[in-house]
Length: 180
Image (cartoon, rainbow, N blue to C red; front, side, top):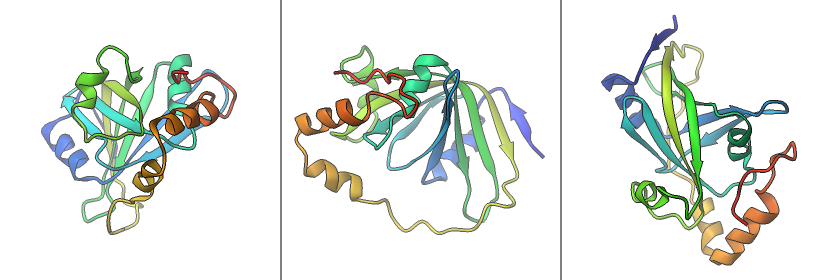
């Protein structure tokens, strides 16, 4: 049975902190809905109604493009271990790029990542939990080192060029706001 809450409670925060990955869901006014898995040490809870997360370079950039169109975001965590539960935060979010006001303050909350592309600041208006009884059991082995190896083989200029070439538009052709 799903339950709704106006904010994250202490038990919700603990549940989020125990998970190794989360998913972000966004959609523009039209076009494709995007759901992306996120991992690494990239999320911080700043209060009962606020979460920030650092987005690292990837093959797409749908979240940024969607937020330029429609300011809404859902984050989701699910347990793959003994306690079945799914937790979602619903709300609005703003996107910060390197050089934007507030970037340095938020970036200081995370390990340094040369591939940090955006930081998202979500304001939560509803939290929902549900059973997760059908989610399979899975064991966490480790974070992947693939991203770090890719970054280590690139200069800062190479990474920025990748953003311009591969991350400046959504798969539906909408701009993402990546600094050129």
